[in-house]
Length: 306
Image (tube, rainbow, N blue to C red):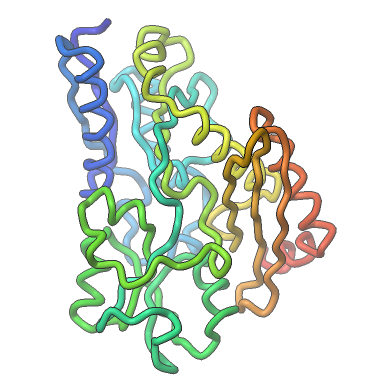
C-alpha cells in the first residue's frame, strides 16, 4: 500500500466532513498509511450568486478535482454523488460507494413548522428546480426564493429571517451533526429526492490497482446498485440541474424498486412512475422508468424546459 494517500475535496464544511469520513475509514484499514485531504476549488464554488440551473454545464463541482486526479496530483476524490456527472472522464471510475445516509429532503423552518403548518405566502428558500417544482405542486401558495451557499449559510438565512424556511438534504445535516435543526423529514411521496442524494462517490483512476483494492472494503453493494439505477434513469432522461426530476431506488427481496418523476417548473404537471428489475441489474429499473415517463409525456415536458 502507498505510504501516503491524498484525497481531493471541495473546501466546504460538508465536503471536508465527508472527505474526513473516508480518510478515517482508510486510516482504519491501513494504520501505517498517512491520509491527507487537499482542498480544490471548483467552478461551482466560485459562482455563488447565480442559481445553478442558470449556470449550466456539467461537472460544476467536480471538473477541477477530476483534472487533479487525472494529473496524479491526488490519489482519489470524494464527491456527493448527486453532483457527479453520469459520464466520467476517460481513465476515471467510481472506486467505492459507501453505505448511504438518508436520501430524503428535509424542511428547516422558523418556529419548527412543517410544510402543512407554514402560513400562506411563507417564504421558502431553495435553488433546486426539482424541489421548487414538487413544492409548488403541493403548496402553490408559498413564495419560493433562491437560496445558495453552504449548509451553515442556508441555516443562518432561516435564523435571521431572510426566509421562513429552507429545504435541504437530510444527509448533509446528519453528517454535520445538525439534525436537531430539522423541522420535518419530507415524505418521498411528496418530494422525490435527487438521483443519488445521500450517497458518496469515491472516484479513482481505473489503472490505480492499489487504491482500488484499498477502497473495496468501503463499498456497499446495495447502495451502489440503488444509485446506479437512479443515475441510469438520470442519464436516460438527459437530466441535470436544469431538469426538475427525482428518483429513489431501494431493494425489495431480489428486486430493485425505483420511484421516479419528471415535473414542469410550475408544478402543474408531476409525472411519476414505479418500476422494478433485478437488484443486480440496476439498468433494468432505470431504463424502464425513462421509457414509462416518456410514454406519459415526459419528452414534451422536457423539451419545453430547454
